[in-house]
Amino acid sequence: MRFTGKPVVEGVAEGELLVSSEPIAFYGGVDPGTGTVTESGHKLRGQSIAGKILALPHTRGSTVGSYTLLRLTGRGLAPAGIVSERGDEILIVGCIISRIPLAVGIPVSELLKVGEGRRALLRVTSSAAELYVE
Image (cartoon, rainbow, N blue to C red):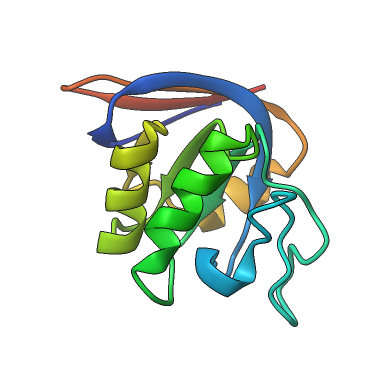
């Protein structure tokens, strides 16, 4: 399956698709030492985002969330790529400084129908963003 979105941060990433119908607060909601979602009551609580193609509607929380993504990258625990329904400042800045490929405008509801755990390839160029899911 192929999904198209708006390019934000260029790059190519491959990994297992991990989809969240809820926003994530990277600061306080993801352990920067393990890459595991720790946010109380979150659907992905206990799951690692490391090396995954993370799909979410948007982020929430403080701007420190951008630096949490950078810390995760430095430890090899960041998502390989991120797709989001809408780009917000925390997510965009975090992906820019961490060099994580980012595409926006891809509906999470459609990705939930596809199912998690499938292999995904995200290609983001200056003119196009495509997510391929096996």
